[in-house]
Length: 339
Image (cartoon, rainbow, N blue to C red):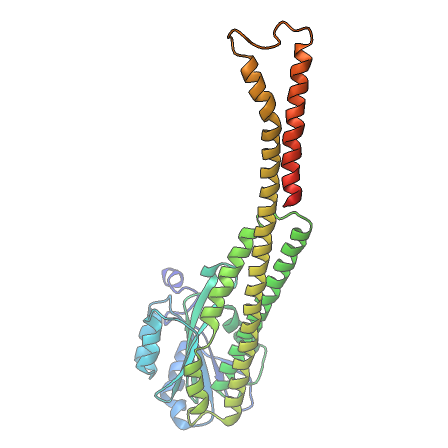
């Protein structure tokens, strides 16, 4: 029970799932011992089979198992611990090293809901590792579990990239729906806290675009000089998947501009409402100024107050107050009409 609690959804070696692919057949589930046996024997037989092993790096045994049983380039382990996690695919020592950023299952438009997936791909093995459950790699697992045929690890990689593009398309659609709702509230003058929501969405989109956009230099080098074991069709598929990424990232950039325009529109609307409130307050203050001044003067307990003994003194003062109030109101509204 203790070992199960410390496995974090994986077995004692850190393996979440493993699959063996034979020519023209669906992937078969592999356990750790079976994967180890394949790595030690079948791999050297060159029988066109390949495997995919998916690890959970939260389990401290995962990286140790990889060091002991899989020949991976040092660049792969360096990417696991480096600070920069921008999406990229590089060629290192006959391996494709990929760093892919993806969203969590319970993605709620929070910047913290983005995590990283690391991959090492050769002609007969794909190693993937993550620290948090991610949507795209689980889509790939579901495709394998449902019997989809894969002919090479590079096909798994391109399928994963397309799954990630599909996840991003879903996010873009959700953002569009949220923005449409905010626009409807703006037109109906029922914004409430929508301006803050727009700021959160925009920050998440900026972070997604920054992390998910593949580094063009590394990708250009890979597509120009791919590994010798990478078939031309796989290179073309990889190029198409990156083009799909570019389209999605372009949509995200346009969404950011749309959100920016909405924020400016909301800010202008709030400024207009504030100006109206200030104008009403100013008019009330101006209209109350004559009566306050005259009441203050006539209310002083000093001798010589005019009209104190006059028969119509009260009405004369009222007429004076009304006259000054009308003049002040006319001046205030005339200025507003001029604006």
